[in-house]
Amino acid sequence: MTPTQTQTHPAASAVEPPVEASRRRFLRRRRALRRRLWFRLLLAVLGVGLVAGLVWLVFLSSVLAVKGAEVRGTSFLSDAEVTEVAQVPEGVPLARVDLDAIEARVESLAAVRSVEVGRGWPDRVTIEVTERTAVAAVSREGQWEGMDSTGMLFRSYDEQPEGLPEVRMLRPTTSSDALAEAAAVVSSLPDELLGRVQHVGVATIDTIDLTLRSGAVVHWGSADLSAEKAEVLTLLLEEKAREYDVTAPGRPTLRK
Image 1 (cartoon, rainbow, N blue to C red):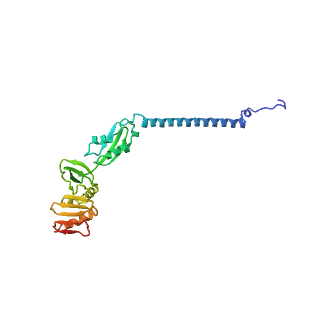
Image 2: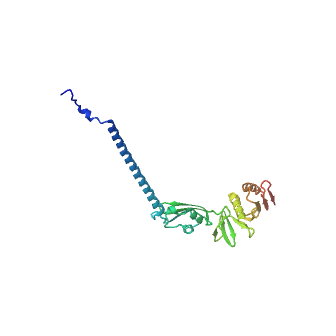
Image 3: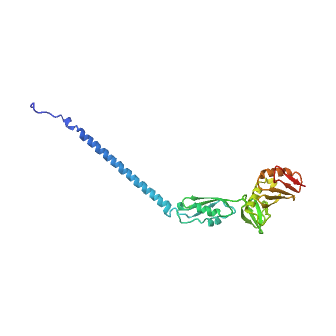
């Protein structure tokens, strides 16, 4: 070997220049980034497609369309009466049914105190009814009617119902407010005292009397302070009289 010749070590030719190594790393990173972007785009497209499919299934297709109503909580009313008034739209996607409108129609029934309407997936509208409860009976135009604690007349009877006190309207023009006041009085009476009442007479909201089975009359006034009036009357009844006045429970009177 001459002095002017140089010998290259084999390992030296295998060393990659720094610029080339950097370029390769950059290309690898760019390809990885591109793959991630495509993957995210694919996921987004699949997500949009899934949402669109669900929207179509729930709001537009007939797969989850209404096939009827399920009525609960009725005793006096029949399920048929409720569903007839409810007018549940069959064939309409359940998600699009106007529940508030159905609720308003069912609440128009006099015997309904409250109602909750919901969606019974996959294809039913649920109607949960709470009926009114009669606390007294009213004879009006030859017909017996049940009255609830708010004074609402909501059902008819063929004859005077047993177990319900009678409320008599002392004027043909007795107002609904006066009936509500009388209902409040009846609802406030303890069972022992209520059992001694033959009937309750109402003329106006502050002119309510109790006629006892003994024939005595109790001037009650309005429904205000009914709990106190009941306590005072219970004590007064220990003394026999023709009339008892508890309109002012702090100053009761009786007439023998």
